[in-house]
Length: 146
Image 1 (cartoon, rainbow, N blue to C red):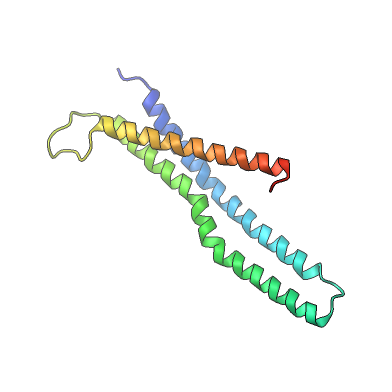
Image 2 (tube, rainbow, N blue to C red; image 1 turned 120 degrees about the horizontal axis):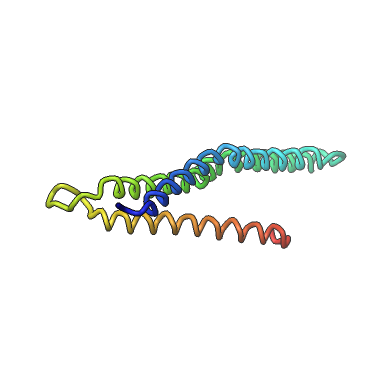
């Protein structure tokens, strides 16, 4: 009997993909909230300014709102991308585990062992990079850099 390790790894990747997908909406809402907070700070932080400065402040507020709307698709893609990649790697790994049949000419595009190795590495690499980025950003946030 085959060991449960690769199957558990594939299911773990699929679970991580589901958790990343579930976190996408709160992450995007947080991005939009940060734009709203910045808009509010610019809009109401300039009380008692001259009319000329008020026009500049109005233009700055409009530019900030436009920038937030313009960057939203990029942020959405960056939030959803790890979930999509983890799902693809997990599905490839699970498919290679569930159908490990012999390689026959023309029957399969890739060797199951190659599929397992590549999908396992890609899933692992994505998780390690995501964890490193999150840890680095938290350290920079705690250190006052961000």
